[in-house]
Length: 335
Picture (cartoon, rainbow, N blue to C red):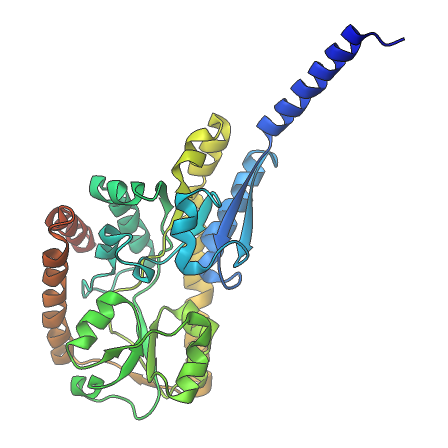
């Protein structure tokens, strides 16, 4: 016969077992968008490493568009709708003004590995941490991207004046420079870029290789730049700060201790596979490559300097923009 005391003991024991099991197993929801591609391999590799290091006790449940729209990922992180997400700073510059410094045109050909190091150091700047803390977000790792180049329709450009009136889909830093040449920044959802080029809504798109491949701009474009070197986008991976603080030490160590390895894998995969595939795709479609002359590059650099100074002036009342800029510029100079 089971007494009330025995039942209570058994109940307490079962509850303790369940609590211990819940404590041991942790699953984080991760909000990405689109589909798995070179751009998301840092997150995919991180998930693989974390699960292996914790023997499956800590897992990252990656969702491609099922948790949030891409432009709302930072908002979702802020109120804990999910624990990890990726977003691009140019989606909402007012929400994350400090990290837009990395999208400025520093007019240099920077390796992907160096971009990864630069962004990581910028993420650790006190002003940047303070900025993202407003969203209860901690920057976990960058998604380093090569210098953006343009694929366009119509006759290949021959002079910088040919940018006059050209409708281009591109991020802030690049469009800041091209806008001074008369180009028109035109917003088009990522998934609709190919259609927009086909129909004439936009004349060109500025992307890193993986995005040109994903949108197949090279199939409708007639020309592509090779040495624009006016920057790229900053699309970091962030975590909800409360969720990070609540991780048990072993899981936190597994997560943070896997970032460097995930980034190394990402860089190698991007350079060896994605960039090479894009170059091959351009060759197959006989796209005309446009390489800017030293004189044209010098002119672009002059315009880039004015864009950089405008960024400082715009944000000087919001945070120590000059300090953040100088810190970042020094990193780009230390190649």
